[in-house]
Length: 266
Ligand SMILES: Nc1ncnc2c1ncn2[C@@H]1O[C@H](COP(=O)(O)OP(=O)(O)OP(=O)(O)O)[C@@H](O)[C@H]1O
Image 1 (tube, rainbow, N blue to C red):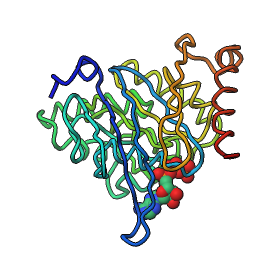
Image 2 (tube, rainbow, N blue to C red):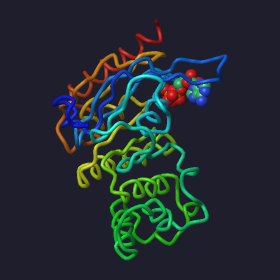
Image 3 (cartoon, rainbow, N blue to C red):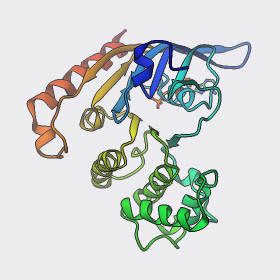
Image 4 (tube, helix red, strand yellow):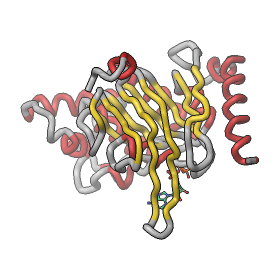
């Protein structure tokens, strides 16, 4: 599968001609209209687009949770035809993705059940990941005993613990308050670097998209396609004061907002 061009040998994920319609047989709605993009190992991509354009549908298709009508997704050189190993999804709604009857460590361990390691090794990894997200001491609590931001950190620890190379993040910070959100943006960037993860983050928030990204993928209205890919050459680590005041940050933010606005008018 690695011999179809140099690009796929270096891309951890590549998407070509991806089309997807949803709805009933009599009322099919074309959502994805031929998506093309790729992600390199270690890259942090953000995906933005007009409301309802199909961002979640795209992420679900990348995760192998939707079967494409046309085109394909290659993950580590292999066509995705179901949820692949080595890829994890973090959803917006942490309260529905964590199992409330399991303690936090058990939630993390549950996601690791397919890993080839001893019980002790798995427990050590789970503890390391909970510590990495700042939840040392909370491993034996239940998710519902934690704040929203803390619950989402359990979900992130769980995604990290599976040793996935690629994290798909669907608006993971949309439900947390503004201060927690800023802290968690920094946490995600730090973890992505520390554990060498490739990340694809869907967000409604253009400032978040610019702050987090190495590259921004801008989608059009439905049926959606990629209209622009914008490199974000801002220095790392990013900082909520200096990065957000950087003229380059403001220029890119302006460009993305203008792009998305143009779709609202069309
Ligand atoms: N299972 C489904 N059946 C029919 N239509 C669907 C289904 N799921 C989503 N849609 C429609 O497809 C479109 C794209 O939905 P999707 O959630 O992928 O967009 P989005 O860009 O993530 O939305 P938002 O900006 O609100 O987060 C929407 O108009 C939605 O109503």
